[in-house]
Length: 395
Image (cartoon, rainbow, N blue to C red):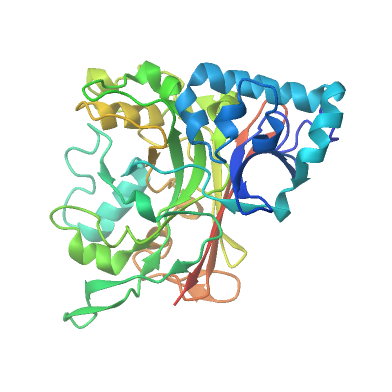
């Protein structure tokens, strides 16, 4: 038990301790760790510890690069501070309500890569756009397909999303430039890289937890009309790069120890560098998507065909290096049931079947719509809450 009075089974309790960053009263960023409804200012609290320099800049960048040994030591120190009443006098003044924090992007995003790891999502997209062909391309079950995104437009939860403009084919067939009429969401999980690598040094599956610090929720906003016109032959570009939202709190992998499970069977068997041989590298994380407060879907992450470890192994298999702050995402999380689909493209079946959002119906997003994505994972004594990623569409 913590002396704060936070219940052991609180989604943000002592078993979780996610990290974030917020602006202090002086306008400078501070590193925070959340416990219950409060946040501890680590930039001020790390007095007299070996970790003081990690948090002085106010972001997670130095902590990410410090590696698993330091990650574990910092976590152990936090648990001691928050459970041993002898530390209360020093720590309590540095706590403040989370809802007063001016949260900012908690780390500098070095590179951003987005994958396409859900078989259900990829199959649905194939059925919509290639109805006379096999829904999955021939390479899909041999490697985790992905593309390089734009790190400079990754934004923290709560940032308004301006409807993008671009070139697309209008309903009558003419090519126009204008505001997207088919703005969509993609509910995803993001993985935050800590320890980097040298060029020419692939990361094997077994080394995943030595390099990945934690996870965040992610919304890969997508302009489907712009994307459909531009993606042949090189894939997503301006239909994706205008904004990617991430949650303000990063959940360390250490908090997800009870969530690991085995992935679904693969056929054909992956090549040796991707062969996990039944390793428990999948994560039981359940997503909820709300539009204007109305629940529209509950995608399950555990069924993703490719795991985060396989994504990282493939990402580096050609010798590409990692940097602290690299972010890679799972791609849209979709399950096999109608209420488990992670995008409006699927939920409305490419705009042909409007869905209920409480105060009306939607095929794609309208100006003023607010999207909220939340998630929970099993913990040792109760659910681990992964925070939220929220964004409102503006004209």
